[in-house]
Length: 293
Image (cartoon, rainbow, N blue to C red; front, side, top):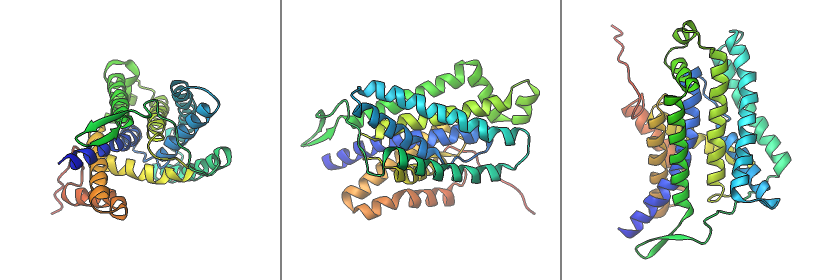
């Protein structure tokens, strides 16, 4: 029982990072219908910026702040680039989605050039501290993962509920034509959504870099698990991204602990497939029944 609790705590910590990745994907998808395949690269960029800032002699918090600024700026620029053709209806959204694949490949390549391709790890501010669970010791950084994720979720929720920009984002997510008719500048809101998605990804990358060494190629698995979390929970549901991420994290930890690492890597696809079969709209998503005859 103690061992199971240990794996569950580890899984919740890692799952909270997947949940943050999923939140970034949901934030952008809800407002634009755009699936951003570069979300994992935002995480890697934030992690590697933080590692290098700490390597230059600064502390964890300045490194986190630098990562947030750099990644948010990247999201702002990409948001402007991708929103312009969508706003003027020069290309279909499917073409823009394919464009995010090109951005992901480019960011992975540039990260390798700028930061190198060797995996790099960020020293945790809680290094050497442990949480006892029976006879086992869980690194305290896993609690920091959960706390950091909870703070980000709370901040994003508050922003959407209690700020004018957040309310406009919700209006765009509900109905773009209705939001446009109400005077909302949809293009500007899409840029804001890109920036928030990037910022959330950057924070997630900094948090996970103290648990898993990060290399540019880590963007793909991080992004895939983020997509799995978002789809499992419901692609337009922020709360669903939380549920999906935590579910994947715990399932992976239990599979890795009791079975083997190969099966652990297969957990996200298997859980995703099961949810798509049993509940295509996601655990917290809305499903629609359509009569065809």
